[in-house]
Image (cartoon, rainbow, N blue to C red):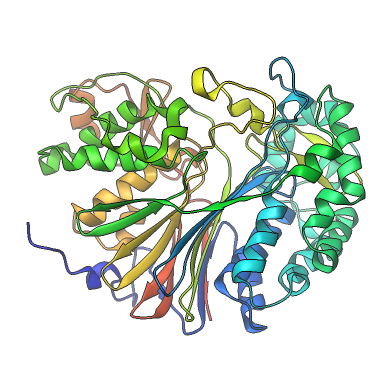
Length: 497
C-alpha cells in the first residue's frame, strides 16, 4: 500500500459545506462551547500557551455546563511538545482509604475530585502565565452571570430528585428557568482562590472539610485526609504506529487502550471497503470484553480479537451512558493538548458543596467486577479517552464526550482518514454508529445502514446529531501553524488567533 500524503488532511475552507478547519497564527482551540473557546483565546492574548487555553476552557465549561464537568469531577490530558515528547496526565481521584461495602447512588459513589490538581499540574509543567490569569474568564462569567443553557435546564429537570437528595436546592441552577441569568458567587470565589493560592488550596484548605461534610451527610466515607493525599498521575501515553499514523492514548486507568486493541486487530485483517463499518463494530465489541482488564495496558494490544467478517456477533459490551466535555488546543510554540473533563453522570452524584458552588462526581459507579472491583483507595476504569495523532509533519488532538462511545467515535474517524482517504473535517462530519447494550444506533442517512442490518446487527435508525454520537474537538499543528476543527454536533466550536 502506498503511503498516504497527509497534507490533504486540511482542505480549502472557502465556501465549505462541511464545518471547515480554521487556521491561526498564535493558537487554535476547539471546545465544547463557544465561550470556552473565547476564554482560551483571551488567555492566549495575554501570553498563555495551548495548555493554559485548555485549562481556561475547562474552567468555563465548569461554569456553563455543570451537568458534564466541573471542579467536583476528573480530567485527563495528553500534551505533545515540539520535541515529540508526549506526556499523559491522569487527573482522576480514588475511593476513600476508609471505603467499605459497595457503591450506591449516594455518597459512596464519590471519589476524590481530581480535575483541579490536573489544572495545577498542567499549569506548572506547560503554562506560561499565572493560574490567576488563566481562570479570570471563568471567574468573570461565574460572578457576572451566564444564561441557563437549554441542555443544563433539561438535565436539572430530569435529575431534580437527585439534586434535592444531594441538598442542592440552594444551587443557583436548581430553580433557574431556561435562558435565565445565573450568578454563581460561591463558584467565582472558589475559582479566584484557586488562581491566587494554587490547586493545592482545593485539597488542603477549608474546602476539603466542606467536601467531607457534604459526602458524609450522604453516607460516604470520603475525608479531608483523602483530599490531602490526592495527586495526579503523570507518565507516558500508550502508543501505536498504524497505517502511517502514530496514535497516542491515555494509559490506564483510561480505557483508551481498547482503541489501540481494535486498531491493531484491524491491521491483521483483510477488510473490503464496504465491510469497514461491520469490522469496526465487531472489533469494538470484542475489545470491550477486556474493559475491566484495561489496567494491563500495553500488553492488551497483542491480544488477538476474533471476529466474523460475514455476520454480526451480537456480543454487546459498550454501555449506554454518556457525558463529559472536550477541549483541544495547539500553539505556534509546538504544544498540542487533548483533554476531557467529566463528573460522570449528569451532575455526577448530585451532591452539592455549597461553600464551593459545585457538585461532586459519582465516578465510583464505574467500578464493575473482577480486576475493576471496588476497593479502598482504588481508581475505577475511566471512559475518558483523549488522543493525540501524528501524521507526517502534522500533529492533532482528538477528543469527544460519550462515555463508551468515545472509543467508537475515534475509531470511525481514524478509519475514515487512513482507510477512506477523507480529510479531517469530512471525517468528523460523517454519520456515525454507536454500539450500546446489544443494539446498534446508526445515525441519519449513514450509507452502511442497510448492509449492517443485513449482516444481523440490531440496527436502530437514530436522528442525525443525537447526543449519543458525541461531539468531537480537534486542534493541531500543520507545518508549524495551529489549526482547529469542530464537530457540528452539540455546541462544539473552533476559534483561532
